Image 1 (spheres, rainbow, N blue to C red):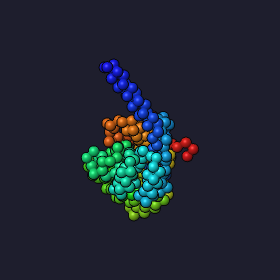
Image 2: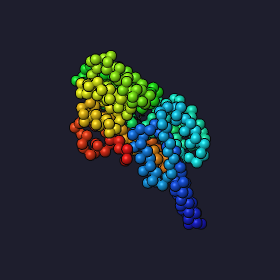
Image 3: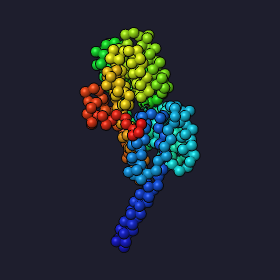
Image 4: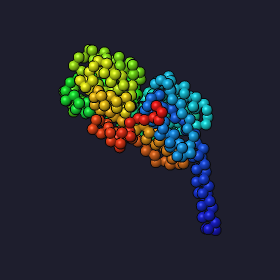
Length: 326
Ligand code: T6T
């Protein structure tokens, strides 16, 4: 009798395990990042690698422009498909995307946020708790690192300017908050202007930075809080012939940012780890689907801090955003 029970239990476990494996094989995941840019393209590489490793199908749709207006209809169409069990997404607004993503969740789709979060990002005690996890950078800390780097590059005093993308986006908002706070606390002789918001348009970032350079002839430095901001800031400084005189710190390790560093325009580049974010998010979906209940609700993926002294080190250079064929 006892033996029979044990055998039955063993068979039951085996069946459950097989069922879980089958279910895991069968899940389909939606990947909906913020906008077409090298950061999310590298994240997509991470998503696709994990999906291949785990035998999961991924449906990717990348909005051509940043914002709730562009992201929501794509989200709604992903929900309407009816075959996605998880959506991995970077919400383009920490408040306005709560409703659309909660509707997806209520329709039975589990949500993992990468790079940006909803609410205050505390999915345990905060105002928004339905996502499984936030996987991304500690952007306030990144802003502090940028502030320390820029303060050092300008000799600890002078006026600096922040160019950013949009208000109410957890990532870039956190960067500006960390940057300002660090300057106020650790570098009191540095005055901070901005941020201006370029709406993820590098040309607009160039114009805005050019206007500040004209208005503030003694500007010592610029912090570009993402790909487009740093690109625009660097271009404006080069156009004004001020490379080296006005120091630029770039968030996001694009090839352009590294080229500007080689030319002495950019003094520090913060590389995030988008590949890790994408890979881990798919692994989290797979683990959740297999019944894992102890996944961390927040995972910080860290940075590589790149300057002239380490940019040739392969252990650092591997974090420069490289997309094959782009
Ligand atoms: O900086 C990244 C990302 O972290 C941010 O949330 C939005 O902008 C980027 O995608 C770069 O363009």
